[in-house]
Structures are given as C-alpha cells and as structure tokens.
Amino acid sequence: MKYYLGATDWRWYNYLSSRTPEDVNFWRPGGQTAFRALEPGGSFLFKLKKPYHAIGGIGFFAAQSQLPLSLAWDTFHTRNGFDSLEEFRQTIQRYRADTERNPAIGCIALTNPIFFDRQDWIPVPADWSDSIVQGKAYSTHDSTGATLWQQIETTVARYLADAPSAATTFSVAEDTLQYGRSILQKVRIGQGAFRLSVTDAYTKRCAITGEKTLPVLEAAHIKPYAEAGPNHTSNGLLLRSDMHKLFDDGYITITSGFVIEVSSRIREEFSNGREYYQYHGKPLAILPGLNDNKPAQQHLEYHNSVIYRG
Image (cartoon, rainbow, N blue to C red; front, side):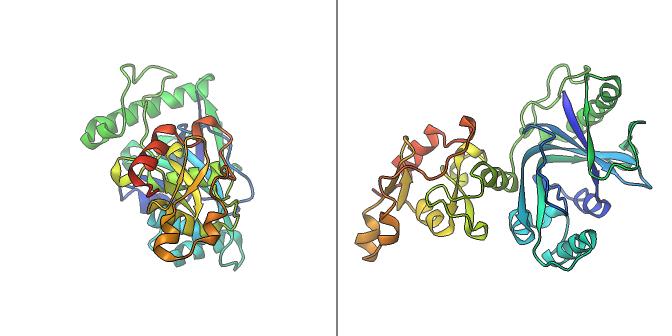
C-alpha cells in the first residue's frame, strides 16, 4: 500500500488540530504542479517541521485542483487553517514572496482528518531528508514504510476506539494492526472535498455550457444533500451559477442519457428564457473522463421525478 508524508505548515496544523473539521485544504502556495502521489482514499500523513520533526496526524486524500486563493477560501473557509481570508492571503504572500492578491494555489482536499495528541506524535523515518520541501511517498512493501505504517495503524486504531462518533465515519477492519492493511474501509467525503472533486472531474468547465470562468462555476448536487444525496462526484455537476440555480429549482434537468432538458415553466412564468432554451435537447458539453465520476443514473432519475418541473 502506498501512502504519503506531507510537510505541514505549523500554523495550519495548530489551528485545525483544535477543531473537528470534516475535511481540510492542505494547500500549496505555488500551485503549479498537480498532486498525483495518491489515489482517492489514500492516506496522507502530517509531517511537522523542525523543531518538532514528527508525524502529527493523518487525513485521507479526496481530490486536488489548482484554484485562485479566493475560491480556495470560498470552498473551505476556516478549514484552510485561518480565521479570515486576509490571514490566509498574508500567509500565501509570505511563502510566495510577492504581493499578488489572488494567486492560483494548489489545493489538496483531505477528508476526516485525525490530529494526534502531542504524546502520540510519531518520529519521522530515518530516511526523511531535511531537503524535502513538499513531501515523500512511502509504501508498506518496503521495510521503512511497513514499520512506519504499523505505528500509524496502532495510533489511529486507538483514536477511533476513543471516539464513539468516529463509528459513523469509519469502518474498522478485523485485522486493524496487521502489517500492510488499511484500517479504514470507508471515508465520508466533506463539502469542501466534494466541491473540489467535482471541479477537477469536470476539468473546470460548466457541464451544460462549457463555460471556463472558474469564479462563476459551482458544484451542484444532483440529488440534494438535504435529501440524503451523497457528497460523491457521481452526485455532482459543475454548473455556471445561473444554471445551478435553475437546476436546483427544477427548471433544468439532465436525462439518463446525459441530455439537457429545459422546462417550459421558464417561458410561462418569466416570459423569457432564450438564453436557456438553446441548450434544450443537447448532450452535456462536459462529462468526467472516469465512468465512476459520471452522473449516476439513480441520482438523475431522482432529480427528474422529484425536482424537475417539466
């Protein structure tokens, strides 16, 4: 099994470890390179910098993207590790050594983070070099990676046992302490991770219009979250903000064949709609490349039968 040890900003760690966030943004100030070290669900360890030089927790990789700073804040808010956008901006500017107000930064969505108490921090492996800036991948197929992972499993298992609320989030395998096995079978995806995963799956373009202006694009639930719709990419569409509103209100839907339908109610109720009727009967402009990320049939059927005002 592959996992990742990421060098962690102390202020980020200290801020978030005193809270219980459903997900967090492990941001990177540069933002030029996509994070491809893990598959979704992979374990991401928090490596604290000197003078601590220890592993202080774990999160589970959900999605990654490069976003303008303002959108990273809109997506995760204080789960970026700050009380305000201005504090976040000042920290990014300090790392970048420039005064750009809204730079693109790397965003790595980690869900269900666990922050260890200080007495449970784990020493970093002997092969960790001080020259590592961002992080390093490890594997349970080599001795160093296997030894470290045994320590991680033991520590996390203890935290889950001490936290009854974790039972709704995690399923613990019978062989929790066995070498090379993940103790975490299911990870609940948070709202920030959902938005980031949908943005990445649709390559930052509106599924209906193909619009690429990212500040006006939003991650829409097909089956509403309030109606037990899951935070999974297959229950999401990236939509321009006006299309999102019309979709949520039942004026637009998507068929099981990924074809757009626009309700006659727009014309009847507002004596308008030319902008929207041009998309009626057309296939979605953008679909995710992976089948598992495409809109799920059961969610589309729910939207068509319960929400759409055809």
